[in-house]
Amino acid sequence: MKKLMVIMLVAMATACSKETAEPQANLGGKIEMSYAQAVMLQEGVSVKVTKIEDSRCPKNVVCVWAGMVKVYFSVTENNVSKDASVELYADNSKTPKTTVILNGTTYAIEVTEVSPYPSTPDPISLENYRIIFTIKKV
Image (cartoon, rainbow, N blue to C red; front, side, top):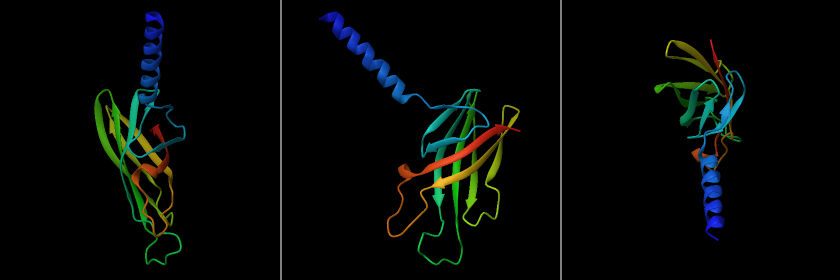
């Protein structure tokens, strides 16, 4: 009986540690993540979405300006972190990318999608946002 209990505890601890581990991705590959989630790149770089500001004109609303969504990132390598932000304009008037220099290496971050798109009357909670982006060495 004691053996069974020990095996169950080890299995539960292993399962819990897997749930809290950061997802893995590759530099240059498409990454999809949600607000406040971090992803660990195989190259030892960690990327986390820290803030989202969404001023895009909601569906079925007439606006003077199409708006934009601004995504804030924290990029970490070897215990050194830098913050960056990318603006994705609803009218696609600017390329949604930025660069971060970390430990002498320049990384380019490009956002390709932020969803869901706003609609009225319900606001979007931060936990429901999904961000698709790439990060690569320049």
